[in-house]
Length: 303
Image 1 (cartoon, rainbow, N blue to C red):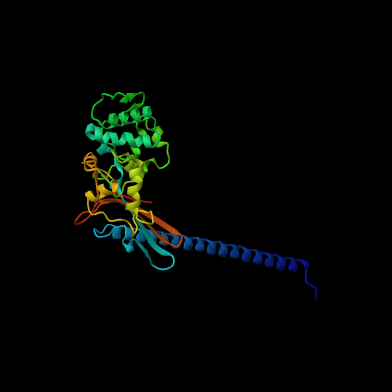
Image 2 (image 1 turned 120 degrees about the horizontal axis):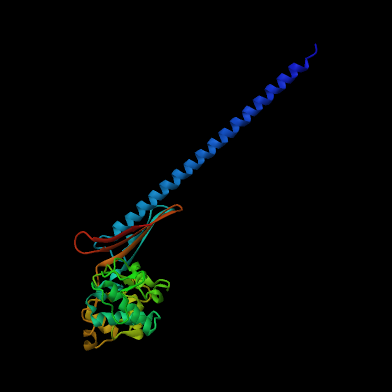
């Protein structure tokens, strides 16, 4: 019996339709599987991010405890091969508190800023302009200082204290300073004011009256201990300001010129905690004043 051509054509068409339907179904299954894999990856990454954030917060809570210092082992903790946090603590009091130095136009305080600006490479005219413009920015009146600017074109001095360190960039004459990498590192608005000699950088120490480069270098060798690094177990523990004076090599009369300008053990700390979960990392930065009882949070920033 012979199969008619029409019947063969119908059978072939049915087979092609079936194969086409199977192809479409396979594509749909593959697309669904890819979408499911992407969702699973997204959820996994999100969970890792939340875990890293929680670890960073745990590090901050440890650092905020009144008895915790930079040498406390718990500032680094690991919870398996890919889960950990690491905390660094730096004394905020070692920085130059701009609002404190500018307030009242105390010549001794302004002298520290002048010396520091020169150390950062500003020439005499640039230093004078920046200092007077900073004074114009923070004072309440509209009378400009000798080298200052209150109003010029679109520029208007705020006539109030600085609200954050970054605001220095808006001050007339600040470009020679703020164009330098890391210019913010030695400035703060959050310390108690006087410079903490146990936390100050070399440039800040050397800018203080009667100290200079040589005394700053010798003092840092003692302060940092044999490893030359602040905040490690071999750091020298100073009993009081009198011992600090002796290691600075200052006579009593020379040290008296620093009275009210310096201190030790300012309780204001900048805490940076980085949590890691697998490839996810989260950072929390806090400035807090650690005194008896609960610490006072002055800044909280999450990255």
